[in-house]
Length: 287
Ligand SMILES: Nc1ncnc2c1ncn2[C@@H]1O[C@H](COP(=O)(O)OP(=O)(O)OP(=O)(O)O)[C@@H](O)[C@H]1O
Image 1: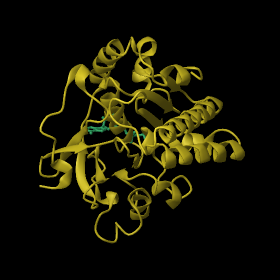
Image 2 (image 1 turned 90 degrees about the vertical axis):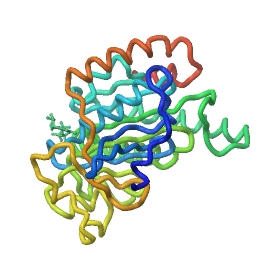
Image 3 (image 1 turned 120 degrees about the vertical axis):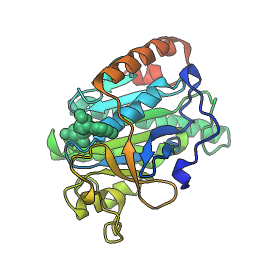
Image 4 (image 1 turned 30 degrees about the vertical axis):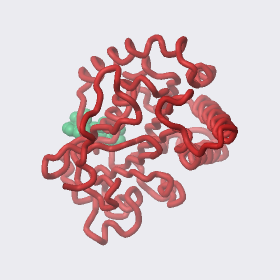
């Protein structure tokens, strides 16, 4: 059994779920469940249109929405991919580059404040039960903000902010989950890919696109997401602990499933903004 399938003895459900618990991501090619810890990690999701990227991102956001101890920052260029979680989100950004930049600037400030706090406490990273909670930053679609809308300067600024958050955010509990249907080196340069320890390549048009997501050289070693059947949506190669890409079929929630879970999660999260000492209120200031 690979490291990926070694589930912890028990994972709390309902209101006991924590962002420090691993996410149930799907099943591997042998039918084993795949669990992925997200805390202190970032995850990059790439693949051709229809490969199942947004569905995977919804699974990640769904896990986070059900956790009592995480703030949700959702940036969705299409609005409808993550839109069903809007009532759960501390900040929801639609196809608005200015709002996306404001939000990332704010997150950068939160990150710096958290580091100042850690320094004052002579610590290196946050722990479960700390005064401030983890933050999930989910971005769908990366290329919309980094290469489609706005001026080149704005796009570059957005990319620089995202890179900084992915680079420095992990120790202070900021998890960056970014998805793109354009796995090319202009959207995911090597310097960005390196910041994402976990990588999921859904079906890709060719081997070089697959390598842009997973890392150079994997296709030549027989790990190419171009070999995934185009009709097998939601399947991909997951590079995580173990260090070798594994075939995984992502868990899938239908629209109705998401609506049910999101309604429940919004209900459980309804008092967070007034009762927690987290950054939710600060983040909400840019909502
Ligand atoms: N894990 C899965 N299991 C079964 N079907 C899936 C899975 N993931 C996705 N699908 C199917 O594939 C369709 C497309 O998925 P999704 O919207 O997530 O793709 P995408 O890669 O985000 O596409 P785009 O880049 O166009 O946004 C879904 O509507 C669903 O029917």
